[in-house]
Length: 391
Picture (cartoon, rainbow, N blue to C red):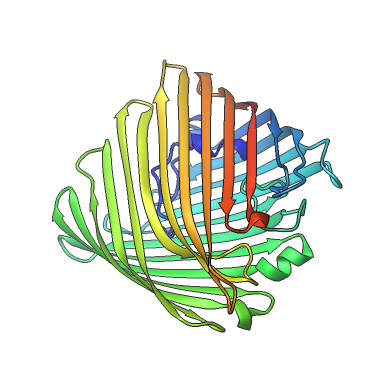
């Protein structure tokens, strides 16, 4: 039930431009090289296209299958890979009612020594029923897309207390709808260099530089841009239960066909595991991001506050929730005025896991976009039940 399980991911909250961060192996996949997961779900979606007006609601019936591999290729090399196919049947959707999505991912981690390692991952996603829908697109437009991503991270120890990290991320977006593709298809590259100093065993000082390029497939001279990020910060990890991270600095952005700009950049994140199977995490990001209407707007200044909680009620029953609150300002192009816009995403879930192989969950998601431009507003809710079995 991919579209309404956003809240339930038990991950440390990550800043929006964090590079090459990998999720742990799920409990169901531990202990054997190959696993198969079969799933099904039924849920109601109040706004299947994310339209501002003339919304279409529908029940959605989903079946999915996933094949995963986790194993050591040698004493120093570990690899994972997975392929998932998912079919959503949306009976009230105009046009195609059966939407087939695919996800393929792989990761290789290699330790050259106890002090030096490299970690590379790749992802390819064909999303026919996107979880997050674009604001401001024409009413009831197909927003399906293909997305490719590659992450790399090289870490080494330079001295007794110093270390260095080189990071890279590549993302490519390709929308199925021709009009959306002409506006939004693009490739993003992000390079990072990080130096660390262990001030105390639990406290690490960090200095970081990042370079980002954003190149659009169509009318790139009108929309392309690149940025230099300069920041410093601290990571505080006094125990396995608590982690705090902070970065602050600036972004110097050059736009090919519009004035350049310099903006503050902030990343704050934290996670506290207060009991087995229970944690709370949260953070804040201030950054520049691409708009879903790149013709009228250069980009958007985004304030993102986020929080997640997961609480184990009993040995087999867990509750979870998430909240993301994003006040933003879209930066007008030319004579277009700036627009204020606030996005709120809220989710709740209850999961029953009588054993590590079977999970039954009930979920609710609510998305709301409130904008100075009424055509960009959006309201969407989804609720339903899902079941997965891994063997």
